[in-house]
Every structure is written in structure tokens, then in C-alpha cells.
Image 1 (cartoon, helix red, strand yellow):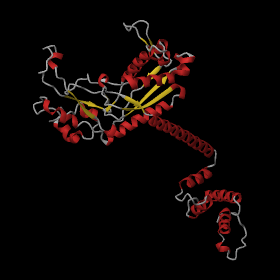
Image 2: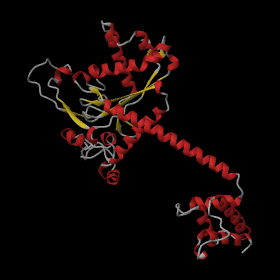
Image 3: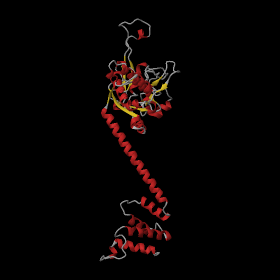
Length: 395
């Protein structure tokens, strides 16, 4: 079986093993015969070739999840909310997308990675909020009211033309991290396909029709991110919106699920407090690193501004010290060694000598015009002073 692409593409890509699953499930799905007819018996084998996340796809997924977290860091604490969850059942989405398997899957392009659109998350959470509002006991409503639903999720008339407004919340796409770096396969087996198509009455002699489809396996990580525009909320809702949304997530995890086929248990989630703690710690670490980086850049800018005010010789000396191989060597010893090697000549050499004299006077014991040592030739500070004095005199 082959993908629906020219032969030279197949040869160049080496059967697409390095492609992310979305690309192999789409254009590169290997389920076609040589005459371009569909191999219905080979659907399962073809699907197995699309499951793994190769190293490139893992790196891309990790980078996208980190990018989301960094973008979220730009919002104040009271304007964002992150919920970390772990799937307790397989998750699937986009089954209605056309595909040779008869069941598609929603991938985020151009990355070819599974995702749950923010619009779908909004729909599930709005439904959860409506169910909470409908509770008979006030305590079970967890503070939710019809007015809160409108404020958070917006209002839309049936004709989608009159009396509509957007809500205060923005729901980001969720990028699941599949367990064991692999997608999964599930099978649905309709036994009454003729009845479902309206061709016959239901009976027990119907032929089963196994249909394989793609899922994100159970025990996968999901990160849900929300941001809030407080200018659209009352003061009371601004103070309580995070607690209200946590209650909605809890209800959705317990009773609704995310994605497709939730009525038969798919898309069930469970809050993951450890992952949430780890994510918060990572956020704190990122903020700390960002603060340190800002301080470093500020220090470099101040250093560059101060250096720009120096005369050219002092700038030359500092440039040399910044690039000297041995950072443990003292500035005085390094500059004296460079003068000996002829780095500076003529007037520049005399200017460097004046810099050395001032520097040696500023450091105790470095400027010695006389030596008390029995062997003055081995008195380093004294010998350095003689050298500098000679350079000052044009020697």
C-alpha cells in the first residue's frame, strides 16, 4: 500500500517515518493500491503506521506547549487561569472530518499534532455552567447564575444577528501530550448498519462492521489555558471568576468529558494537582530567569554606555580584558603581558602605561618603586613597576 503522492516524494521521505502523526494520517496515509483504489482491508495496518510521535514531533509539541505557557506569563495572575488534567479514557476529536477510514481526527496544522480547539473547550464549559445553574440546591450551583454565564461566555441570539455580545473569557487551544509519545487506535463495531441507513428493520442477523479510528490514549496530559478581560465584568465577578471556572472544570471532568463520543466514556478527564504544581513552579522559574536576563541586559547597557564615555585607549584596554583567554589572570598582569607582546606601540603604549600606573596605585602593594627583597629581580610587583616607569619614559 502507498500514500497518494508521487513516487519521488515517497523515496525522498523514506516512507515518512519522521513526519508527525497528522501528516501521516492525512496526505501520507498509506492505504492506496497501485491503481489508486482504496484497500479496505488494510486500514488497520495503515493506521498503525501513523501512531508514533517521532523525535521532531515531540520537540515541536514541547516547544508549542512552552510557548503557550510563556505567552500566558505575560498576563497578570488575576487575568489568567491554567488547569492541568490527565485523561482517564481515550480522547478523540474531529471524527466528522473526511478520511479514508470514515472517521477523521483534528490535527493542528501545519504542525500535524493533535489538539482540542478552544471553541470546543468553551462549548463544554458553557454546558457545564448551564448544568450547574440548573441545580435545585443553591450550594450545588457553586455560585453560578445565568448572568455569570452571559458575562463569561457571551450572548448570541438564535438568528446570530441581534442581541449578541462576546464574553470576557478567551479559551486557548489545548495541546495534549500523548502518553508514551504515541497516539492510539480504537474500534467501533456497528451491528445494524442497514437499520442505521434506513434500509432494513433492526435484527440480530446483521453483519458487524469493524471501524478503526484514531485517539489520544488514556493517561495523556492536557493543559487548559484561559484569559479574562476584566473590563467586561463586574467587580464581584472579577474577584471570583477563577473560582467559578474551577468549579466548571470540575463538573466537566466529572460529568461531561471533552471531544467526541463522550456519551460512551471518551474524553473523560481528571484534575492533576501535581502537574498543576509543577507548571506553577516552572512559571516561577521562568519569571525568575526573565528577571535575571533583564538585569543582565540592563547591566550590559549601562556598562556599554559608561564605556562609550571613555577615551579610545581605555576602551581598547577594556575590550582586551573582555576577550583575554585567562579570565583568572589579574587585569594588571594581563595588560602588562599584552604590552610586552607589542599590542600597543608609541603614544598608545605610554597611555596604557599611565592607565597601569593609576590602576597599580589603586591596588595595595602593586606599585613598588623600591624593593626590600633579597633578590629584587624576583619581586614581581617591583619589576612590574620598573617596566611601567620605563614605558612612561618612552623606553
